[in-house]
Length: 360
Image (cartoon, rainbow, N blue to C red; front, top):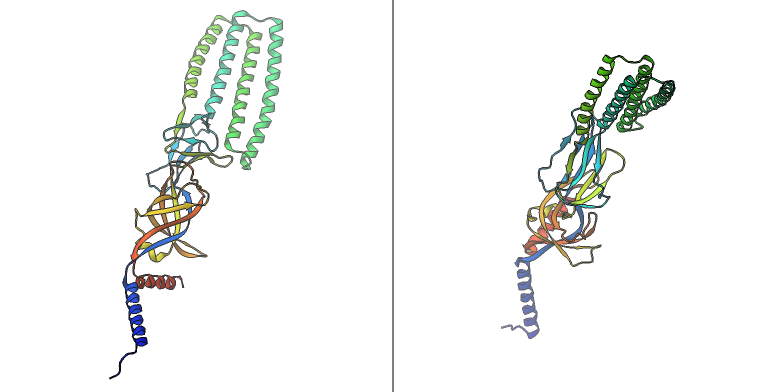
């Protein structure tokens, strides 16, 4: 009977041992991790912009947290162009807190109306004084000079108004500039009327009933001016709905944006095949290239699919990162990794082949 030589026994033993380890390795669950490059993005962006018909629009431009942001239209009774007056301590890049008053909205035309009523009141007072005092030669000469100056100023402003209308129709200046020029024209028009009325009153003299009419007109204009003053002082506050960094915009319809800084989004491209394994709540380990502090952790919120003409469909994982120290900024990049649970070698190889087949 043939007997195995010692060398053959060793070979058989090694073969059996390798077969055992291969079988165990093929079926033993091993920890799986997803690693890759990540980027930091802003979770929420809130904006202030200028709309049509005198409206100031505020709302969410970007809101990954689904906090129910909605547009708020702030406007006045008239289709009036409005001023947005930012708080004096604000500057580009400043941090604002939730519920801070960052600006007030006031009527631009209301200021012009106030100035017109103020000029009319001065005109009525001058008329009343002239009626009571009578006219002197030097008063008449001064009144004539005031009329001439007012006519010249109004003529110059008329040219500016026509020029502003042409520029606005050509989309070269905003509506705000046109309304400012219109307001100045109305003020100068009222000043000319005042100068003419003053000259006529000095030339004609006055009867007792004229003096009484002038006094009643003064009282009426006083009440109207007081009402305009109250309306002018009425300002609507714009409140920040979040804590973040404000960006003041120059040019265009946007006036300002506030970007959230306390919570940021970490975005990572992932294979489509592992999307079912990437569940909400998983912990992501992050090391940002521009952050010299210790590695950070984030929590996966959800996955999403996107498609482009060049790269086709791809998947991303979005995780929320708490930024208590304020060192992390939107735009930073780094490396991220998170656990996918355990897989056997067979399952991992099958998943890899499936992923490659989908890519092809």
